[in-house]
Picture (cartoon, rainbow, N blue to C red):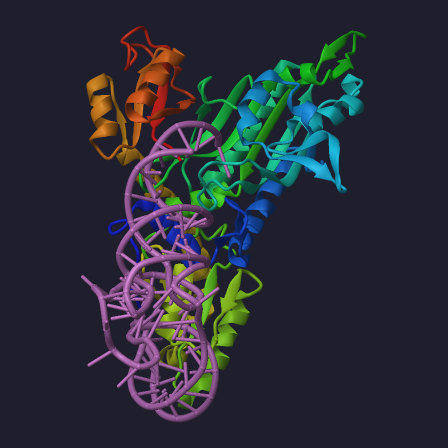
Length: 477
RNA sequence: CGGGCUGUAGCGCAGUGGUUUAGCGUACCAGACUGGGGGUCUGGGGGUCGCGGGUUCAAGUCCCGCCAGCCCGACCA
């Protein structure tokens, strides 16, 4: 076996790509910047879809589907939106062997096509709120790509809601941000910081963008999900009005929110180690794998015993049984570790005679012997421990790499000389300061975290003027 | 679009103008022994050396051009 690639002998980005490809989650395709998601990678996405979709339904949303192609004129209706997306649009100019009268854009996001329909669907306050989600692919012609983190085409869900009042739209925006926070923290075991984006970092066309930001193991930040308050911007652009209770006409208020296959990248970069993926039990497509260990003379008895264990677990957990005769146990151990399966269950002749099995944790490597009857309950509690253990480990890592900085010299040293991380700093709110900081350090404001308004008293880290916000600065993906 | 690096078997690589039929590891195929941390042995298949041109008695190796990929930037979820 060749020496495994680690962040110590290559850069972090190569390490990450190596894990993605070694675990056979995805490949680059013949289409530049686009990836092929392999079955193992897609299984992760399906798990995420299932959980998120349940959370969307619980909060009153419905799924729908809108076209891939958007008339070019639609994109141009909202000024900020055009400006934000123009550089990365792919345009269809020909179809059916003829040049089209008006080109179509391949959707980079669906606000415009959806709001063109909402105009027809919304007449009265009785039609509101309209709470719709779409699972779809989108295309943004990115200059540089990285599997799962930034590909030209990616899969996502995009929620688009319409409301009668500004307050309702804002409430929806924050409700969905909270759904994302819960999903990231409770399911992906990935601690996130929630808050609002600066005006420079917000979505093109939004009034405000809220986000969940996570710290990866190289101490860079990753925006893992966004929820936008769109105000009346798209209602104005697409002339979507409704008649209120009093008989007057008003523009509707909007939100949109999305997470993408980038979450798979986030999951990998949060928990994985040099042996491969580490998946939290709640999201892992396979939670445990039963590996029989046998010699030729006792093969059939061991296989029967191992199958009994598998059968005792299969209705309660997502469990696989690896009786492939072509690979040695050692090979299988390494392979299933690479794939991130949270618990491995070894059953050999010794275990069979004792009526037991050995459970091995992927996250710590700890081996636990369990009697046959107690395996299901043991596994259940182990999953809980692994889930919270991964969360706590990631949280401790973030806390250990987050510092409060008040002097600009220290700020520059933190990002330009040190290893970086999250810097919590006071900021005056001026876009000029923000731009200067980006110029000097490549660090950007990731988020203005919630719940820190009282702490924003003091001087801006860059210009020294009266601060208005506490901001989290970091280099990001 | 700039800067750097790399194109030789599925993958990872060596090959420094002249060892015959271009090698090594791994993967693959056949068989046997094995099996509690990526097994051992024997035999086997697999190559337009990225593409095009040039120099030379002789080019994977030198020169020119082109193409592709990756990494680092700029842009972005």
